Each structure stands twice: as structure tokens, then as C-alpha cells.
Image 1 (cartoon, rainbow, N blue to C red):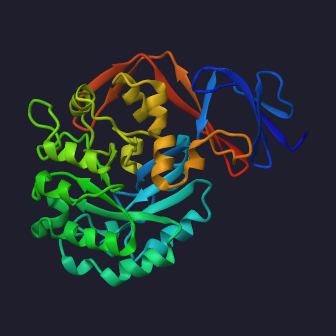
Image 2 (image 1 turned 45 degrees about the vertical axis):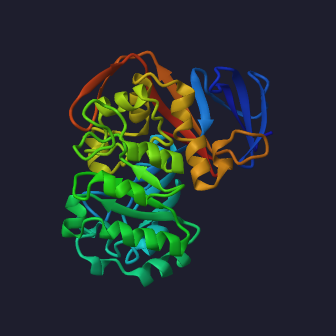
Image 3 (image 1 turned 90 degrees about the horizontal axis):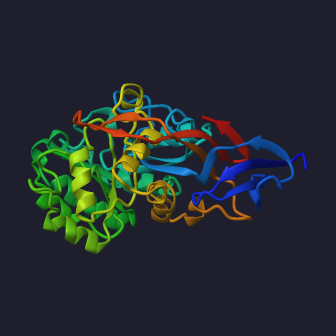
Length: 365
């Protein structure tokens, strides 16, 4: 039994307390609390879910300010799988792939359609930086890691090019059979120009941003282009970041039945250390404070994200499956939460990441 690890007295999402037995990196047994045989880790008071997945991070520390070390924003945050959201383009995607091979966190990536990636923060201001052949070659060379293409479509990024970079992105998406993740922000181009170019399985990130060019009108009602995109199967991703999450907009979305698909951080070193992101647990606490259930919130970083990645097994806790798990606790502690525009909310419950089990190893947060 020495090669069996028991997560003892741990709670599933429905609060049922069990022993979860892991053998050779796989879930061997889910049994009555106190009955599991093996080397025990006392998890009394903790919950377990499938491993948290963060669909929008920046994990290429060479690019400042938008970069961080993989495991700092991965396993140390209770996140077993990260998706780098376009930090690198074709020029340096190979370096990100190399970095990922020495990390404990699972890594996927959106390839920036600009070959320079976030070497500059106006990476789509010159169309010559969109090298179509390089995108095709990188997508083939790193096909298992690259899950989509990234285009940051806001005025500070595209400059005078308006909607043209997104039109090119759409063509590249079709040519590579890779969906798009599109960052939305300040106009031009207007959101009414952006949304119609998104198709089923494309990801709109920062959909709860509080900028003028957002997806809700001044009364908080969803724009028709948002309703139309949802009907087409466009995926709604939070992408909190330094400047892209508003409590006011999130409350309007909830009041109007506009539900997130995935909850992601858009985390990098500065907003991890100095806020307003801090980490995935803090962000999940924000959604609890908005009135979403624990199951809804955890689905946003497990089941829903795993389904989008085409890897539903990452969202399951099931005998015979790899043990890809996040352990977390719910603390009855008040916490002040801050969004990207300085608005504050209070929560009486705090989610705290405790550890992960990944690739046969238990790692404390």
C-alpha cells in the first residue's frame, strides 16, 4: 500500500466527505471517509475538484510587463493547467514550449497572430508583423500545445489598422482550424464591428470589462451583438486582468442571465503581486460574492474549460482517470475584493487554494 496516497476526509463539491485513493498517478478508489488504505494526507476541512484550468494567463517572463513564471501562476495558485493567451507569436513560441517542458504545470497556448507577440504592446499596429506563413508553420510545429490563435483588438494594440487585424485573424483561424481568442477593449474598432467576426468556439475574453466600448449599454442591458454571438456558440471568458473586470458590469450580466463560460485571471507578475488579480482563488471568491453557487464557480475553471480544450477528462474525478486535482478550502472570513476600476465588494466567504495533485505528485500551495 506504500505506493498509494489517500486524500483523507476530503469533501466533494456536494459536501460529501470521502477518502480519495491515488495509485501510480491515477484515481484508484473513492471510498467512505476513513476507509482508504495508503499513505494518508489529512484533508479535513478541504474540498477537492478536478484541477483548476486558467484559460488566460501570461507565462513568458522574458516579456515585461506582461509575463510571469509558469509555476508561479500555475500550481502555486492551485491551477494545474494554464493556457498562455498570446504572449508569444511565431518568433518565440518555441521558447515557451521549451519552458513548459520543465514546469510542473500543464501548459497550452494561444499563438499571437503577430510574430513578435508581446515583445511590444502595440503588436498589431503594423500589418507586416502578421506573417501568415509563420503562423501556419508554428501551428503545425507546436500543434499539440497551440489550442488557438490570439488577437488583441483594441485601439492601443491595432493603432490605425482598425478591424483589419481581426479580418486577417479570421482567415488564419480558418486556414489553421484553430479557434480565435479575441481581447476586446477601447475603440476603435467598435465592439459592433468586432463581434460579428466571431464564430462558434471562438473565445471573447474580457467580456465583463468596464470600458466604454463594452458589451452592455448604459442601463446594463446586453447589446444585441452579444446575444447574437452567444447564439452562434461564442465562448465567454472573464480574463480579469489589470483593467478588464468590472463588478458593475458583472452584476448587470448576472441580472440579465448572461453567464460566463470560463473564469480566467489574465494574470502576470505585476497584477499577481500588487493586484487586483492576486490569484485564481481571489478571483473565484469574487464570483461567489456575486451570488454564484460554488458549483457554478468551480465549473468555470474545470468542466467548462476542459470541454473547450477538447479534454473533458481534465474536468472529471473518476476512478481510472489521472489524478488531476485541486484542493481548496472555504474560510468563513470576511475579505475586501477589488475590481479593475477600483470598485470594492465584501465577501463573507474566502476560497483558499491548498494544494494540487498533478502528474503523480502532491504540491502544497
